[in-house]
Length: 157
Image (cartoon, rainbow, N blue to C red):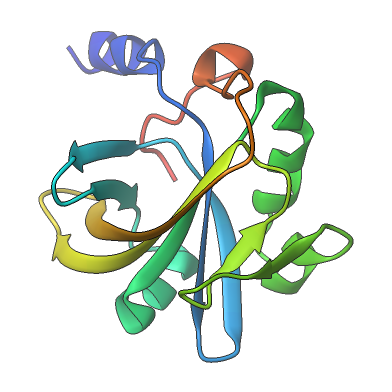
């Protein structure tokens, strides 16, 4: 069953996002694909993050995150957010501080800044549920999804 489960999960489709966060002077960004809207009123967004990720620690301490909706043509941006060095991730790209203090990447389709209202740990990933406190929309383009990217994150770290 495990082999079938992994194959099935590898074929599930998701959006591919960049999640950024800040605690005091520490910033980080990570690729996030296990993301979902969970409510419209109030506007709530859920992001799943493995506890081994540096962002997990910052999310717990800061209580905030920014979720960036990438355009298909921004696929190349993902490479910089795979690495472990937070400083390198933000070098030579345009970004600014958002209303939450989180790094906001320039030229994404949009960005949702969230205040974490709930943190759950139902399995091997933590779910951070954030209420949207600010939103930016930079224009309609095709969003980046797992269909545009080789491979799909199945939870293995």
